[in-house]
Length: 247
Ligand code: 13P
Image 1 (spheres, rainbow, N blue to C red):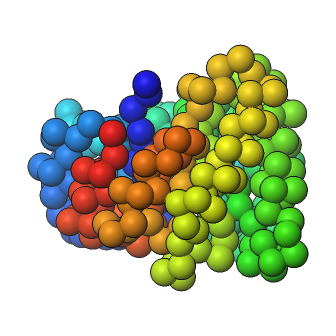
Image 2: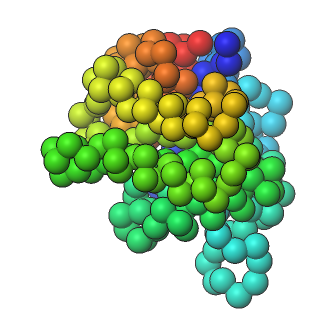
């Protein structure tokens, strides 16, 4: 069975000083982890955190990537640039980027393609809003979001990570119940199975107010292969508890 993956998403948080303290605490505590561990950091800190995680169990991740390869795209970061800092993972299509930066399904699919081409594993985020859940549209929304990535990436689809993050659970303290989350994860797994013979290889992470108290139950579900953790990933004790709950 594959190891679970616990990835922290620092979002727009951190400083040179606080990053050093956080990674030192995580590296010290994660030495005996059973699972894979990653931190997705703000781009200006990639060089710093690359050095901090070298020789530890922790892999480096970025939070976004350009859909373009290079050129006149002010403010953007290419996958090739991220790769130069030994970036192993890159979030694409986080709901905050879909919501505040107008990222479409097609754009997210192209970003995933750029990451894959550079040897970076895209962590493709999908998830429904509260209004969509209330309207009974959860499955339709997450399947549409994942379908675009499958369509663009073809047989490479077994190389991605998927993160199911219900928008209503992000930063709200409201978590999907383990059963609610598992139900959506099973839908996503079936969709991957229809696209590749290697769907079992794909990590499907849950994200949205995962914390030390609820992680074990969520991570015990058959199709939950890890977590994408926001707020709790900034607190070493909490993030280490989640890591300890993973297998
Ligand atoms: P929280 O864990 O803070 O709810 O954030 C989840 C998230 O958006 C991770 O990408």
